[in-house]
Length: 132
Length: 171
Image (cartoon, rainbow over all chains, first blue to last red; front, top):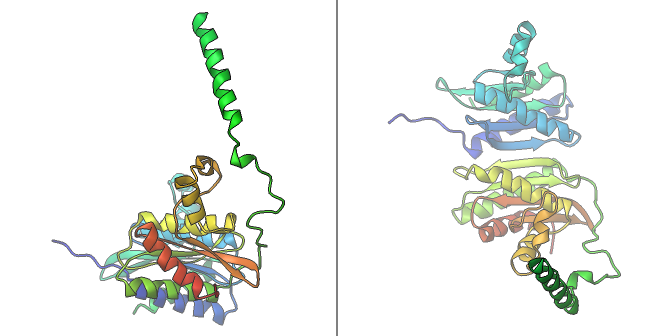
């Protein structure tokens, strides 16, 4: 039987804390969402000052990255070249959603919203890096 | 024609019988119910404090739950899914916390209202969830948010939810 790795709550706390630290270092107020490989919410932290919309957008960026196994930055680039991709269902093609790959398997994703898109991605990447 | 007449008479009789019994919902209280002011939104730090306490209580009992914290504007602030918690309860935990904020009361009130009070109309109100495990967080007489838990039985959800809420307020 094939085994697959799964994110634990401890992993999520680690990712979220590292991402939050990266945001705080830059005085950014964002929402950080972590989803599993099925696009279901595992962990969410909306920092003080981040908006209700940030929570919704962070989850949707994370869902896109988790379910499609590719970053939302990649979606953004592809949409810029092929506008018809905007019709893809349930896809949020805005940078800031990054898949979490462990041993070559996508185990979920981090979605961040609150600052500029490339900064959102920087925060998500810092969170995933903490996983080692 | 006869059938129509019979229906009309039956309806009149039924209406007459109902009119004789006082409808408790016709009572007009002087004061507003659940008149807790909406306070400032709960901070992330406090929301995480509630989640940590709830997770600890759940772990102590060997349960696996989803825990959500909403702020006083009924917006998601923090969420945690424990290892192995059921997927269907992600939304339910959020729903319970949100309903507790929107209606400024424990979601148990809806459950009791439907079950014991026979107030089925409660189920027609917007964004209601008639299941215990959603509790408002009140600070200095103001509601700053709510905790919602789901994944076990309603009673299990409520125990863990209380542990989360109690970490922030003395009751």
